[in-house]
Image (cartoon, rainbow, N blue to C red; front, side):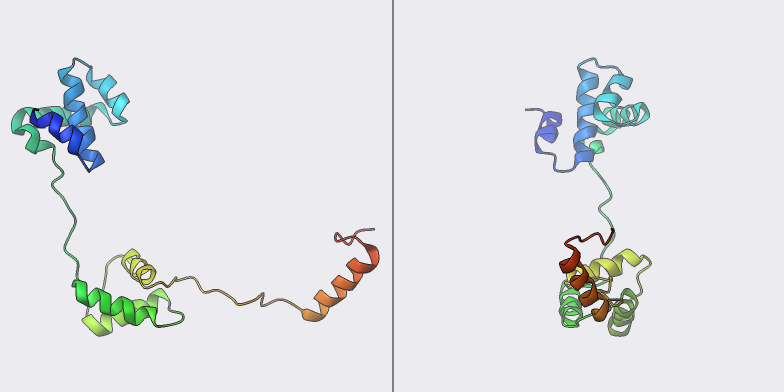
Length: 156
């Protein structure tokens, strides 16, 4: 089994699979535009990956960026999640303040705080236990009206 076939069969990243398939389709004689249409990528991308394969081989098709290193260590994050999860309600701003106070870290993206809240079993959305505008007297009056008229629409 050649390296390209092995990459196609074992790829766990969709980007690598599409890159390898663009090369394979080219080897089988498929035009760049047609390959792009099949793989739902631009012809420019197909040309790029075919050229990179010619220059670097299969190694040139691998994804080279895997994200940045986390600011928090595994134990720090677990400790923070446990601490935040013990609270009943927490806003994103309160979560931000807690991370900064404990570890001196300020994330650039709000999404990092949302992810942290979610991992702690919390949500940034505050909920009400009941309808704050509910008027109990009005509800009872309406129920009586429905019983008398037999209609829930309240129209004559």
